[in-house]
Image 1 (cartoon, rainbow, N blue to C red):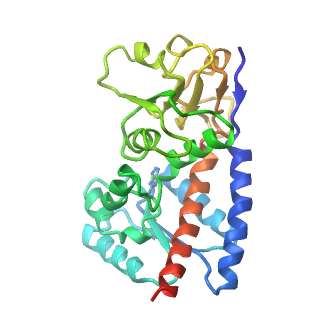
Image 2 (cartoon, rainbow, N blue to C red; image 1 turned 30 degrees about the vertical axis):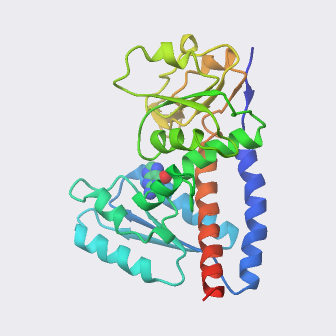
Length: 297
Ligand code: GUN
């Protein structure tokens, strides 16, 4: 079997088309959705992500503000910036790009974000709402994975989903979302991680395997059931002397898995483009909610 490719690049374009209509409707009411992104320090990967987020806002005709703060920024300075963004009426959503420098308490900063502007869905209030099945926002990467499944017509109801990885950004919320009574969910979910014994014995039971381990080529064909759907969330830069940059982007899933899977996301061009797309979607949603709140006052 050779896997059908699930192309996030194409599916994200479909969603951007829907967002453009919602943005136009907001602009008619005098509201331009606004996203602010805060970057602390000069991590090159974070710089790239932040640049891409600003560029996408521009393309969609949204307001965007990129705030770059030095790596020496204190926690108090960053909390003061969060406070001013919480109060800024032109900013409907904002995020603090992670990881933060080691001297800053990441969770304390996330906790200071106004939950109504938390378009990353990292604030414990929003994580809790997601868990109880009453979400205001969904975290961008897991939401992107779910949209890939829904829009590719992949049945999730009653299926065994195995999530590989337990990060706060992907693994934990992904597992929580797939077990909900909701469209693109209703699955039986197992989570495996770095401390799990004999990971392959569990991943081989997956109808849908979602991999976010952060290790290049971690999932090999012997770890996958024939005909499984495989979603690769990995973004690993490995050395490649043939590339101009000297590195190449690969996922957590070995390329040969495509001979066993029925459908699979490529890296790049699979989950990657969906993350920014869902962030934009959350920002438009935040702007719509702001308008609704204003109308009901
Ligand atoms: N770093 C890696 N992924 C993310 C993300 O989705 N949001 C933020 N804020 N930082 C990240």
